[in-house]
Length: 356
Ligand code: G3I
Image 1 (cartoon, rainbow, N blue to C red):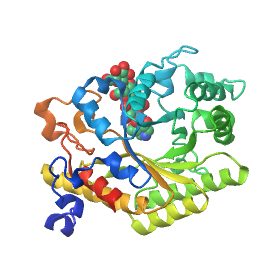
Image 2 (cartoon, protein in one colour; image 1 turned 30 degrees about the vertical axis):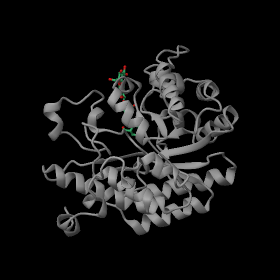
Image 3 (spheres, protein in one colour; image 1 turned 90 degrees about the vertical axis):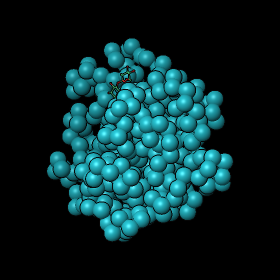
Image 4 (cartoon, rainbow, N blue to C red; image 1 turned 180 degrees about the vertical axis):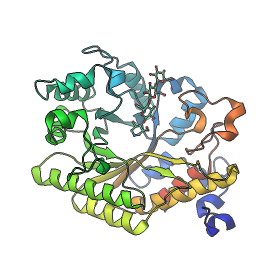
């Protein structure tokens, strides 16, 4: 449902016209973030770096990168003890060459695991099946990573556990303590990296989001009590332009509780699903900018927030491959730049949020 405000002219973000190149309001997102001592960046696949125009846009806009899939165990260790660091190394080289940080995603997850792993976990003698992996991955990049999503998406309240945790192979084999063990192993492997717990579901205003936020706070409170070295919460930030919405009051209260416990906050995978709306691209883009602005304003207003990363920079690679030109008008438009690398209202919304 489009709000009246949106139909009349949208948010500030939706009204701002892209500035002429070089004008102050043309300042790239990395510079706007840095002006507040923060980071803006994007998820990237190393294959995308072969696209010169895209690589130039990435270097212009981002001061932090995260591998979209090349630091996940299915890519890193396709067979037991056989490792492929080529993608992650290429991304780290690009980041280093362009004065960017890099963050690691992710070491312990229920998904993106190689086919051999799940059976190995369920039959594992001890936690070394993940603590050794953590030590090896983080040890390889020790001192060079801004942060790591050590554990990803461990919460799933719909499964009905009192602790709200997901009943994945890690939990089945090792119990809830696998989370604590993972973060202690991570802290030992790279004491200088910020250790992040990363998940989705805390952003929205629907009843299921309330349960998700409650379970997240329970996890963070328990970790703090037990001295588990989780240092930041990663809010993935997968938003929807035409479904659900943001309950600002609930989001602000949640973020304040996270900060009060001493955690830092990162937006780790921001994008906007613009499905379910009108076919008019301008209206879709404006609705996407509107929800972005409504999410980022309270998040960036919280002093614990350090970074915003979008889950990709351009719509060009939303299918894992360059989008054929003929299809551009009819595919999702989730990211700050369109498939031709032109800045969109979502870019303006992020710029505005940093500027605010
Ligand atoms: O492995 C190939 C590689 O050889 C090829 O060069 C490349 C380019 O075509 O594609 C690679 O394939 C796939 C890759 O996406 C790139 O599209 C991988 O097989 C596939 O597993 C991978 O899926 C990723 C998925 O997580 C699972 O890891 C998606 O890119 C990625 O967007 C998605 O991201 C997740 C976050 O990690 C966690 N939060 C939710 C988010 C969205 O689902």
